[in-house]
Image (cartoon, rainbow, N blue to C red; front, side, top):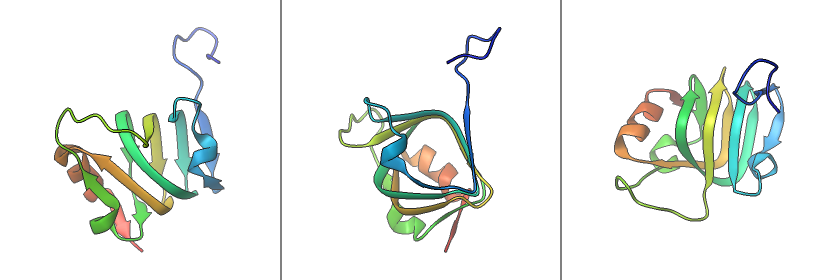
Length: 115
């Protein structure tokens, strides 16, 4: 679904909801074009940020064990790709990890807090 006059898909906005990430993924295991504000996001899931993903002021139970570093260019299976999404205002991730290159994970480390 596109906004009239726009070539970009409409964004879904979730505010203060409790959500299961698997329910948000499409048949290609992708969550796209959504913004989350103050949500509780439940796994189990490993999220793979692809492009245009923002995480600001969110909470991971243990960032040291919730961030999985991948070598540049490595292909992975069994993850949920995230593209064109934002997570803001103390979203809480439970039973969720993020996978990505060192550069991507370094950005997440500065954007998340411990519980």
